[in-house]
Image (cartoon, rainbow over all chains, first blue to last red; front, top):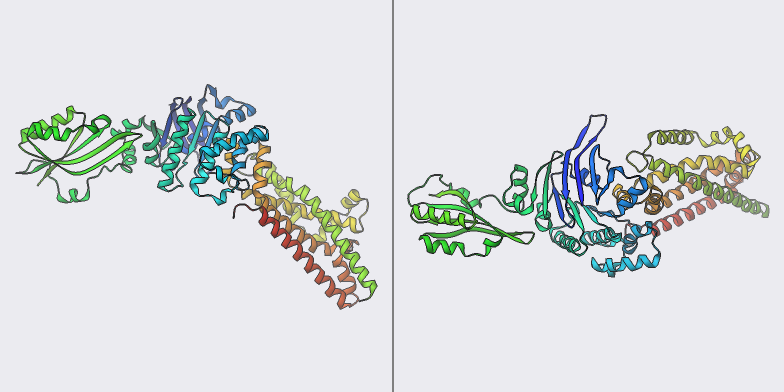
Length: 345
Length: 219
C-alpha cells in the first residue's frame, strides 16, 4: 500500500544543512498498522509528512496505492490527499466550527451536498461516541474527545490510509488506551492502513503489527512487533522496550550482590521469558516433577503485545547442579528463553 | 446653547459619521486582502514568497511612518484624482483611507498569524486549496481577533478625522477647533468631547461584544 524508497530530506538554512532523513526505505502492507518509533528529532515527523507531501522529500520516492506522490500535479495531489487522512498530536481542530462542522469540513471541500454530508457525518460521530456532542465547540471537549473528533474528521473522506502524528502523546494513559482501541477498531472495520509515529512504546505494543525504530534519520531496526520486543538488536530498541517491559532486576535482587560462579548451597537465579502459546503451559511444575529441583518465583510480569501474551519470570532454582542443568535444558526445549543471572549467596 | 450651535453640532456629527464610515469600509476592503497576502507570503506559510512579502511590507511601513497631517497634504494630487476635489468632507475620506489601510493590513496579518500552524497543516492534509485555507480556515479562525482590530481602526479613524479640518473636511474635531478653541466657546468644546467619548465607547463596546460572540475558543 505504501512504499517508501531511499527517502532523504535535507533542510537548508544559513547555519548549515540539516539532514532529517538519510535514506529511509519502508514498505507498509494494506490493512496493516505500522509504527515508527524514535526520540524527538530523529526524523519521524518529517518522515510521516513526506507520505502526503506536506514535506517535499529531497530525493527518493513515496508510492501510495500505486501513485508516485512526488510526481503528482497540484490537483492530483489534492485528490490523493483526500485518500490519505491525518490525525495530530494537538488535534488541530477548527476552533470556530462545531464538532459536526469539523467532521463536515473535508466533505465540504470535496463539494458534497448538505444532505449527503449529514448522512456521512452522523454515523461517524456515532462511531467515535460523540453523536450527543455534535453541536459543541472543540473548546468544550476534553483531549480524548477532541482526538475522537479528529479521527471522525479523518474518516469522513473514506481514506485508504491514516497517518497518525503522535496522536496520543498529549493524552493521559487511560485516554491513550481508549484512542488506541478506537484506532484498532477502525483498522479492522474499514481495512484501513495505518502509519503512526510515536515516542511511546506502549502505542507500538498495543496496536502495531510492525515497527521501525528511527534514529538520526535512519531506520536502525525493523520487524514484527513481537520479534523486536523479544529479540531487540539495537540499544535504542532495547531502551524503548525497557520503557514498557522492565529489563532491570527488581532492586532487592541487585542489592544482594549476585555471584557469577556457583557458591556453596547457593541457589541459581534465572530469568525465563516466554511468548504466546508457552505462556499457558505448566512448564515450571513439569520441571519440578521431572528433575527434582525446587523452583520459587521471585518476580514475575506478564504482558501482552497486540493480544499475544508475553511474560518474564525471575525464579530461584535449587537442587543438585546436574538436575538444575537438566531443568534449564528442558526450559529451552519448551521454547522459553533462559538467562542465567547468577547465584544467590 | 443656541439652536445654531446645536445645528452645527448635529451637522458635524453627520460629517464625522460619513468620513469614518466610508473610510473604515474602504480600508477594511483594501486592508484585508493585503493582510492575507502578507500572511500567506510569510515564512513557512502556504505561499511563502519573501520578495512579495518584503515589497508589500516596505510600502505599508512607509505609509504608516508618515504622520497623518503630512500624509493628508502630501497626497493632495492623488485625492483630487480620486474624488475630483482636494477640499471638503469627501476629499478627507481619501487620506483617511490611505492611512488606515496599512493599519488594517497589519492588524489582519497579526490576527491571521495567531491561527496555529497545525490547523493550516490539517486543512492542507485534507486536500484544501490555498483559497479554501484562506476562506474556510484562516479568516473564520481569526475572526474574533480581526473584529477587535477593526474596532481599533474605527477608533483611530475617529481620532484622525478630527484633523480633517485642515483640508475643509469638517466634522466634530474641526468644530471643536473653530468654535471651542478659536472662539473660546467652552460649551462647544465640552459638547464635542463628550459626544466623541460617547461614540468611541459605543464603537468599542460593540466591537468587544461582536468579538466575544465570535470567539469559540473560550466557551
